[in-house]
Length: 213
Image (cartoon, rainbow, N blue to C red; front, side, top):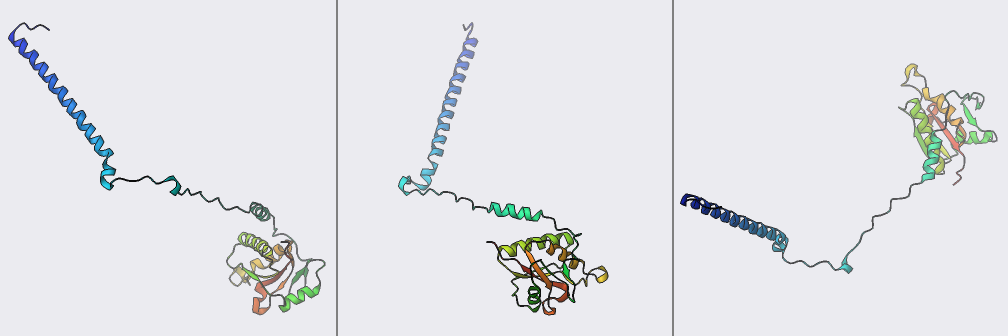
């Protein structure tokens, strides 16, 4: 660019000076940014001092524990058992011994067994109380209780179905149903009405077969 006058020459000089100032300012800004970056990199060391890396031989590598094994077959057996149907319509009238206290014994089980159950000669090892259960809840709870008792090797248990004093019409809603359900469980060998001291007409004493475990 050729200056045509002193005025043009002055404008050119100003442009050159402005460009030089801008370049100097940019360089200073670059240097300041570099200083800040360096200070940030050194911040940890300048704060806590020099550190020494952990020697490889002193490192501890923790292996996460393996999840506990689940009894898969037992879960499958339980699911299959829960799906078994215990019908409310099952007729047990021909299977019960009709005496002063209704009782049940499977074919091959002698009357001496139910007699001993009534007299309390078998020690009761567990109990299920069905007070407050709805019918479907009671059926599932009873099935699970019988399976658990058999698994633990219990032979004699008590099932409390209640006398129906709090039911409409004062009828024992669960009493006949519990009898039907127990008859349908292969684990059950016999049952009798409990002694008055053990619940009387509101409970059954149940004899289970020996555990296979």
